[in-house]
Image (cartoon, rainbow over all chains, first blue to last red; front, side, top):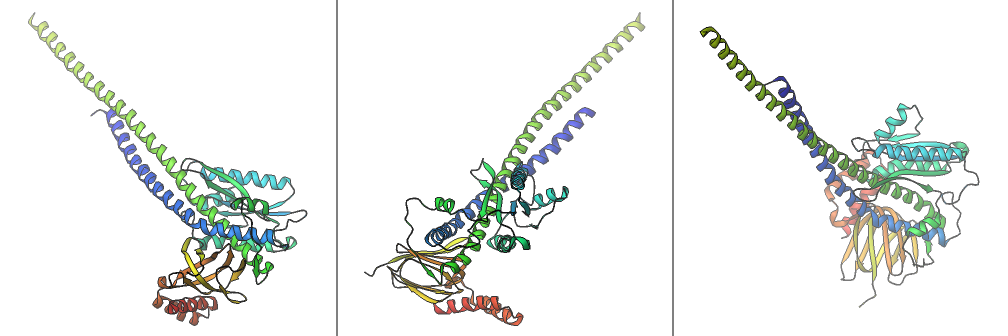
Length: 304
Length: 124
């Protein structure tokens, strides 16, 4: 076998192995998307009921609560950025990080100091590499977040928002996550969690429904006190789940195009290898024919 | 037939139980509260404790609920809990071990959780 042909054969083998790996990763990601979507669906009833309850307290009572009232001039804001622990997901992480950076820039233009909280090793690595300060980071659960993880993430944020701004607390809480629109579309977006915009929350609740006048047990303040942290946790949980689903969908897509690419590469390489083999055969034939005719010429010459 | 109310017992990550009931007893921070059909709209904070649901078929469903809310309006009752388990889902032996460990370690919250689970399991 010629050297050229051997090189092609070796490359085809290695690309075939790569293709097998990316194909497997694609299929794993596909099954994980379905699982993550199911989790999103399972968490919906809780989130819906909670939203209804928050709307009911917020609109049905005149209580002023630090978590619902906007400060006159907010000076500090917290941004929670959800990324993934692992890469190989196309532009998933860079889109989320870009959105977070735009949000940070916008907040800073408004004269607010921004504390960044990050979920996922990718985001942490990005911020560490640029030597930016991270208020707190959480890693290790982005593929399959549980409610306990959401609670863990929410705890320092709720604590920060309950503290006075002068003592290191924050006035606003923003979240950046990747919304799972469909298998093909995932969009990174930012949303303000706190202070609540009650009109917005009310819009999410089913339309055309008149909220009843609730009897609060023990009191509206106490209910709101207990309700809002749960609301934040449930929103963060939902965002974590959506980010996980989006990440798996992005991985699936990235791996699918890698597999397609590998297939194409194998095709091109086999054509080249075939051409090389043909060229080798042609050369061998012409060498034999040339040798034979040279021999014939030689014997003919000696006869003469 | 007695009047009914629709009950949905929802945990953070799943719907635990839903159906029709005639009476629901839950523990709020200011004491036990019983809700029957036609109760006035209510929104309360739950303590960890057992929730008893008397179904319209005459059966009883008991669940251990740890923290959460109860809201009632339009004859629909929602019990929102971070963690909720039906009594027949509770593994009594495991919970007993947990209770002992919590006692040994002096973890009051864990002890209370295990205690609530055991009582819910015993009540059904």
